[in-house]
Length: 384
Ligand SMILES: *Cc1c(COP(=O)(O)O)cnc(C)c1O
Image (cartoon, rainbow, N blue to C red; front, side, top):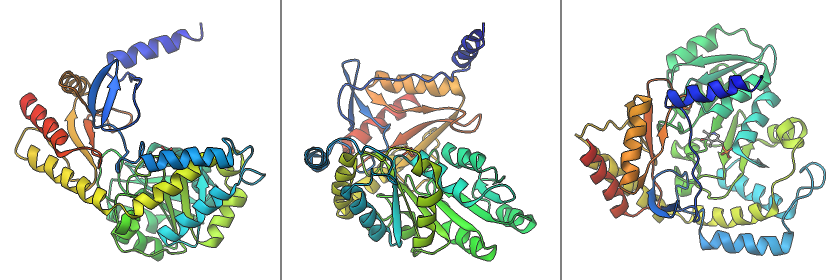
């Protein structure tokens, strides 16, 4: 039977320590998760500023539902573009310093919107090997040549660009790499994009709200101003604490995406409730220097606390602090041992990360206390 193959494949996943197990949370997203009636300190979420359950966002969502209803009713280009969506786009453009911004339902959809709208057959995309899965899928959907360079290797990228005969070129990168937490060399990437007349597309899912002045993101972190060849993608389900994503760029490129991006046009506009919550979130991000300072302090506490132990942190200045373990079964054993101590840290395995680099992905949030991070350090020291 045709489904038997799936049964075998699922058994294989289990045998290789690759089967994902979903847990149901019995309380809102926060530093304390409730699973199977048990309270756990969670180091899993991307809610870096602790805004996902913030009262200001909840109030804005409730007020938004009363004023604007629940559904948008249609695609943005038909009749699903409501005033809160428009206001949010204008605020996001002003906040990031670009001429215009376009709101999409998720970061995955935003990446699928950008790449196929800008390049196609006969063109080439130059992509960091550790880019997020949604960027990889976006290139495949575009049918452009996919030239992948080793992680952060500017010399290799330059060689690929020099050798390319492609009509249009596009450099594609995570700004903060989602499983490593390190930051891409954006000034150097921009210089290469200028030299080879390429687009530079930056996915700042983990930098928006966290890095840069007032949380403006990775470009601000490097002091890079808006530029017509840069497309900046920020997601709104991580530090912003809600869901959605936006693309910021020049008036021209954003108008082109609005006209041509299929994952923008052929999908229902996001709920106006979300736009209302996100407007409140933007206020808190802008005024969030205390939250960001606390997050940096926790990061330093964790890194200092594990220095000199068997636990190998990789250099990461962000809230993402991976501990490389290597073996798939071993990482699951460690994650389970932490769970027994009431600490929930996700075990990340292939295909999310390269084979042989399974890891614990500790994700810190401004909602954590120093005592919570202390507990994690203590447990890891014990287990070492
Ligand atoms: C999470 C993530 C996305 C997807 O964003 P969603 O809004 O969750 O769909 C895209 N790129 C990177 C680097 C991410 O980490």
